[in-house]
Length: 241
Image 1 (cartoon, rainbow, N blue to C red):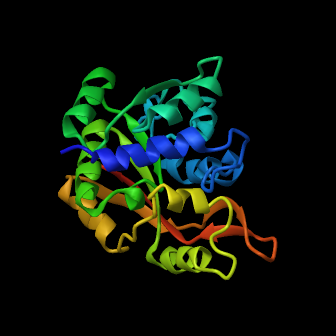
Image 2: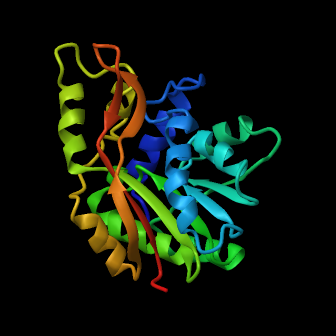
């Protein structure tokens, strides 16, 4: 199974039109507020920090470059070629390697594992942006990439985030400027039931090794000037020891 052409076109269109300046994209918060917080939860639970690290759904590479300062080999992977063009342009020194990956296509994930061997994986807010029928395939692909020794850190908006996003999208003034293009391109975040994520992981042969709640920081601010944060749940997962 692979993603629909509509879904691919939506992401390509979004990244072709997105502004270049830092923080212009709704979820593109600075690493100090995102990957750095996640790494504090992830690193102590890695079986082997020396494994390659895959940043799945890397977008324009903001978090990838941060991770490349901390791990010996980092691969930024994304469905969108336009996003990867931005990531490469923002990384002229080549701190990381960037490649297109349809993560719901199992053969693509298997090919990446054949190249890298077992890998650690970081994924932020990708599952809820998948169409419902692709979610298990995405998690199956994650299991293929991490193999036996790798660990994955996943963070996803919780069910409670749905009401926050709906309120933003339907406010009196319409959606805020950074959320509007996401909706316009048909990348409306789907709601993933909190109880569904562990089920996807178990079905893929993975075990939840740790989990917790942590706000997912955005780059947008509410009318009160306070930065918008989405309730989220994080998971560290891998093969049972």
